[in-house]
Length: 196
Length: 204
Image (cartoon, rainbow over all chains, first blue to last red; front, side, top):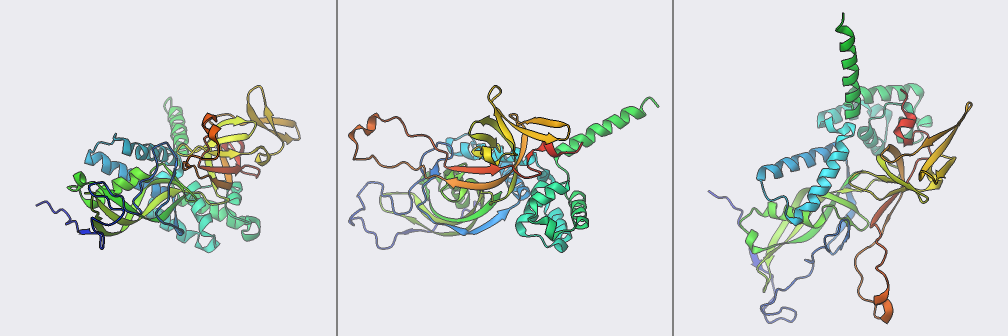
């Protein structure tokens, strides 16, 4: 049985056909339903509706990667015409963003890994922004840590920086470049063993 | 780098889409409207995250479509100030180094924010960091396609919505087309240890 959600369609209260501004037979456009402006890439969309800038939440690369991959799978399965002009923008931005994130170490992150990492660094008292950057970039040297953590010389001793580096490299999975390097070095050792 | 922004909008669903599930039609319409577009003072919209609330749908006289007020959250690209990002060099010009993230291109690192001392090589059209050591000066080139780590120091939004015809000037029609400005630009800096080309700082 088609369980389509019953659409509650009501007449807008108080609007009659003879009212000024409501043209008989013409397509009336009520307030607030103006469409965004045309299709050139990255045009400023007209903001007739409200957006609450204070109601923002920062998202990790990993979660965006997961969202976009899931969305892509869903759209592939539904088999809708992805090539209609309206979807072209979505396709472009999804493809480019996925390409960017898959080059970073975030592609293998899962919520469990993130949780483990956050509990491990609790003792260092880092701000949210610093933890987010550590998750997104997975620094491997002390220089990179100093970039991401503000005033790291005053807040962290050398041992703490080493400990933080160790936590990062042990808990967070490595990026695709590091994996590639590991593969080639494995190949080299195998070749050396062969003649023996 | 990405933020979730809560927004409210009225979505119009035309009658020939009434057989589809409302949530799917609304998601498609929102993505059609916002994906890959810059919203002034918010950022570059990527894709819909979820729909938090759907209010009643109304049909207005003269228009058979339904209009639904939707509260939703959208994934937006908006790096915070002083965030460190990794991009690739798109090119160099006397204005500075142009960096791209793939999905976002309008990032500029002005000459004063490069690792000093830096000079612009006119012949190869590339910026060079003259790194001094005891052995002498090494020239480190910032070639196109190289991965570069930079810090976001400034952002600017420009309202590129079309303006109405100006009634003042009768000769305004003979003017050339206005310059195409990018609606959202970032200014970066690499003048700190650890920033710059990734190859400069990796210890092999």
